[in-house]
Image (cartoon, rainbow, N blue to C red):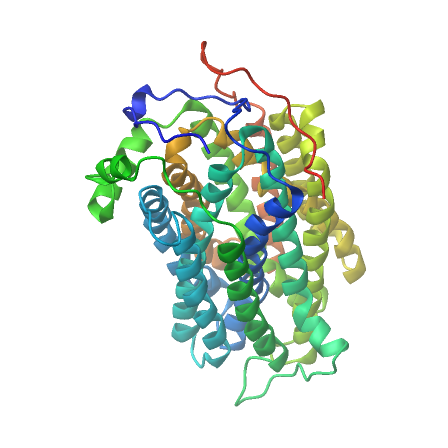
Length: 472
């Protein structure tokens, strides 16, 4: 690994958008990249369970459609500060487990506990509180994971590293989203609700399996992928002074925001509208399928359960499309710019969600989900691939955390405002909320075309070509 150079002031650090040759940094094999990303499968398994089931759990516990957004607010509100702070802390951490791995492990342990406790929720406040804990500790695992891959992989392998993340995320999401349907239809587990048991047994078992997946895969990455120590631990300790801890992290966040490179500022607007659309989709798609497509008369009916389970199958299909399409992303960016490819993918997702207004057959939903899967593959990789070349190499943790602010801020806005929109503008029509999300994705696709990747400063190392995937 290259030596850790003394950090210069943030304003003086060069930004580069191109992969650069670093002869001191070794190439990684396929299985090494697989191992370092496997934890993402478990993190996404837990996240997909909450995306596919939490709105339904809230409705099982008596929530109305316009109450759902505010019940989600605690999670993104916590992430507003938690993500950049955790990113900054991990930049200056070193211990027996390394720099990033302690955060993976702590986050995985407590997120798994939240998954185990979730099926025991007996009131809305309990379910909302456990969702807050689950999302918070998932972020503690996820934010350093993004920087972990950037730390270890040479620049010319990073696109493949982030594509592998998309692959793991897709696999985790497919299996988690379809799990309640699989347990009911293949293993004949009763999925009906009961006054004394408002959350179906199929969902309960899915959360237990998710806890085991989350903790198990993160443990595999922690054990199988070591982090090389800094060349100078004393220098790291000096850099840590005044920059770590809560107050030091807040100061670093302020300084990093002031020095945010232009590429990151432009990506911020794309991320903002992207996640306005994606969050509307996550919040309302499962209930929309149950109420609008399956015409469920109430959340206690079997049609409602059928609709929620079919929405899980739809989530599995779009995540399956994400897995398949992520394989081609790196090759597409060799032929066209990352901006053009990302804009095309977001446009596909936006049109897919807009098409839902005309669909009444459950099976046609699967076609629309293929388009959403194309967008999702790009959302999970290309913004990070564009960002990683524009931020200081030794500040990836805090900048990845700040970048995630542009994911949580739109979620907070949706949580605060969309209840009013649902009640007074959309008449609690959950399908219209999802279609509106498609409009936000089209705005993001348009803004993507205005991203300008920061030019490589003169005198920097020579850009390296994109390398092919590592051999098995």
